[in-house]
Image (cartoon, rainbow, N blue to C red):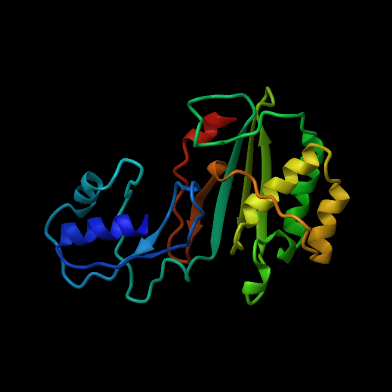
Length: 234
């Protein structure tokens, strides 16, 4: 995405432009709210927003352009990030690529909810990171974690907010929650990983298609989420 946006910006402004994003996502992971900043030396006298959207591919949209103070940084200034993860359990072609499909087995949703409620009680996510040793520390302040289930039980919506996330962290958490729901892991074992910071022998992350970076909060910006379809999802 970064390369595409930089190419279009450079083309429209007729000068090389580099952008700095609020973070990176895995392949097939979505972002419904994403910030980047660019330092532009020259002013422009045309509708830059409209021109960018006309030139960008259909799967990338620029919602707004906000002037910032000189030292603002899209990545390092963020104080909270929120991710949403969507699961559907009945095959639906309209959700293909936009939600994770898990058709097999019955999930104990009560056990899953109990495990979700544990997340804000701990702040070291060493055991839920793909490569924990490459980080200076694995402390993540989880401020909220929720699990919503549709009335017919066919769709699940997991949401988590924290000051930072580690590589693969949310997909690993969701993968473990699914194991808890399927009876392959107890809630006690799930909490053991959080409490004792013990990395499991095998780490299986949930499918990437269900994950969305959905909200970024800065000390000077707090815009509402743009995931209107999420309300209809459950």
